[in-house]
Length: 178
Image 1 (cartoon, rainbow, N blue to C red):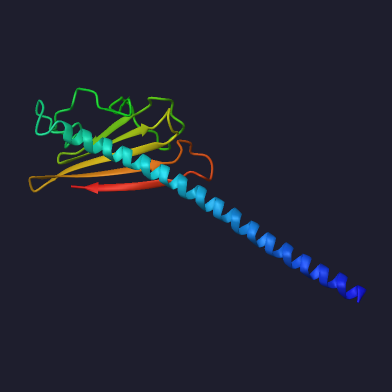
Image 2: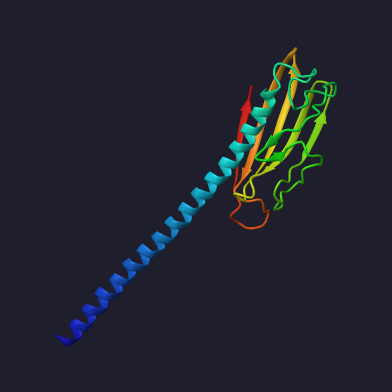
């Protein structure tokens, strides 16, 4: 009987240990999933902020102000907007070409670049949501005239952090067409 009791105690102990490890593994995976979900929300909020900024400034000057129907260029013949366009305390029209990869921008950093053809233009700007949060957005506003009708597409890519390093960087994209 003594050997059976030790065997039974070891069997129950190993079974309890196995169940404990399984619960621990499940808990760790759920915590990782929860963290990824919250970071994904930050990225989509950054994308939404960039898209809302573009929509606001696209419609702010309507119907026309000095011949410019929008802050954003519509073609190579369009009149450039001369004022400032502020979002999150930043002038998104600050001169400069956005970098191919975002690196942690200082507070207030933004860039603006436009490519134009005779009937279309694409304006790209970056928006950092610092200092409150370390989130960024890269926004492209494309305008094209087809058959006398102006079409606009806003593509806003939001990031949960502004650094290009690290496996936890998430990108979420919003696309708006009208």
